[in-house]
Image (cartoon, rainbow, N blue to C red; front, top):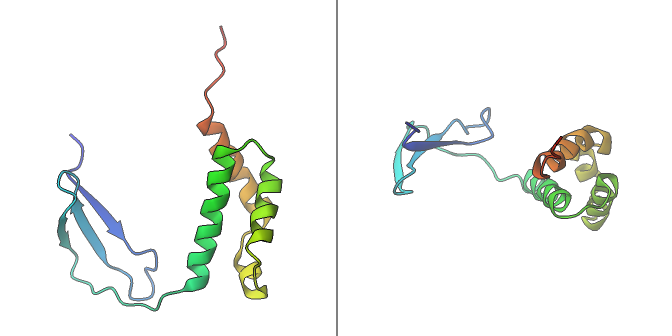
Length: 112
């Protein structure tokens, strides 16, 4: 039998972000939490990085353009500052994972 609750954890585990909340899968309502208060400053750069990478992933799944071109176009469209450019992964660091993502989304070729 599948779990009846889903757990959510803050991604910032080292900065007062050790909170874990549990939500009922049936009612989608709050169930309980681990009692740790969630308190850390908002980081706009990390959020922007995540948004840009999500756009890239969606384009990789929706388009058949070269992954290298998609990454370069999204980075160019974002008008990244010097600090943001340092935070973003290099093309060579994410290209392999994006190829795997695209491969998984395509139907397999039968060998008959």
